[in-house]
Image 1 (cartoon, one colour):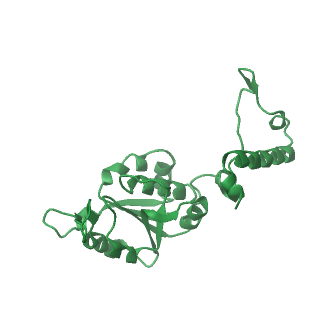
Image 2 (cartoon, helix red, strand yellow):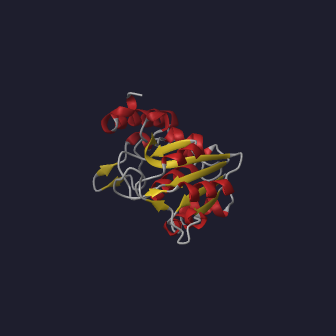
Image 3 (cartoon, rainbow, N blue to C red):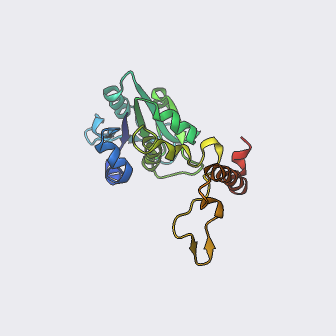
Length: 221
């Protein structure tokens, strides 16, 4: 899988790409990530990428030309273009799975007052990571990229992500490690007896209980 990210703040991605699971996935060539500063594609003498909105109003709007030209250069027949925007579809684990099956993802990071509306003609999917506003799309693109990369075959063990929160619209079950007793708090006995059938049943029951208590909206699905 290849992921291209369009931004005007490429420095924000330096630590993201050089730590933990993301770093290992890149080193093992399971995924390729490239950051593009679309300011480099601006035809303005000062590499300007934004301008005032037609009709008036506050803020600046990202211009068509640099982004169109950048996509003209990097897009292929396998590309799937995602715009990070507050008015996009709310991101969900099921979308992460679908995106992880793409050969080439292009993530577009917005800034200022957003994109010129005509840029949306280039986009296959508009995504929002939640009902709040960020300074720009960079953090959102990292969230999306991280959640996708960990689903790429070979990045982590398959059974690890199959048992995580939001699969089957349930939260994850509670987990414990040694010691079995800490400050009077005991690990549930069922987890210590080695009966895998009972353990599986217990964990499923705990998933439902936890989801009912903390995210009842998920059970409504």
